[in-house]
Length: 221
View: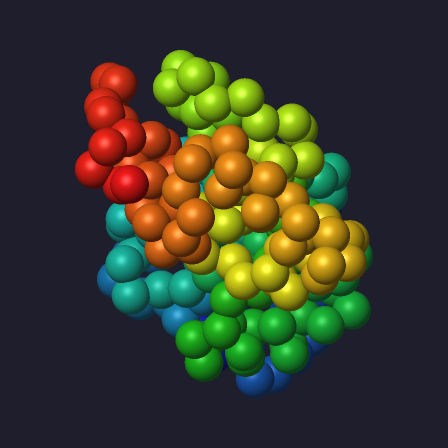
């Protein structure tokens, strides 16, 4: 396996290079003017911490060597930048300590096509998805207010999930309510909308959510 350790300047990078040299299955490529012609299987970028400059260097390396896998090793984590590393198409972003423990295994699975990212990325993605859902719900609440609909906070929660085609049991599970309680709330939502049909209610709520301006409810009655 041909491995390029980019920018061998710091003591830590030299130590990493010496560590990798111990494995006879690896052929280390010198970081000089001819490294592109060497066509490495894997490029390792080793940085103290991840910032925009680091990610740009990694992105440039991906463009220079489109057929090579690019691994970014770091010391100090930055959760937001870890996510950006995933989005720009890096093949692995790994803390230094973890890489040292599992370096050969990591190189092999990355070469085979796997992507490797630390557990922190999962948490970042989860939080960002949660923010998107919250933003959509806030927008939904604004839209229904514009149409003169006055739901309680819990009714907004249930109407939003109803609009996104959750069934009563799914709504109950997400909001930690009983199925009967959800059914009662939905009946009250029907009463406030004066629409006593689930599919028509979902259609109406979706049209409100996507609307740019007010429209008549008469189409749904």
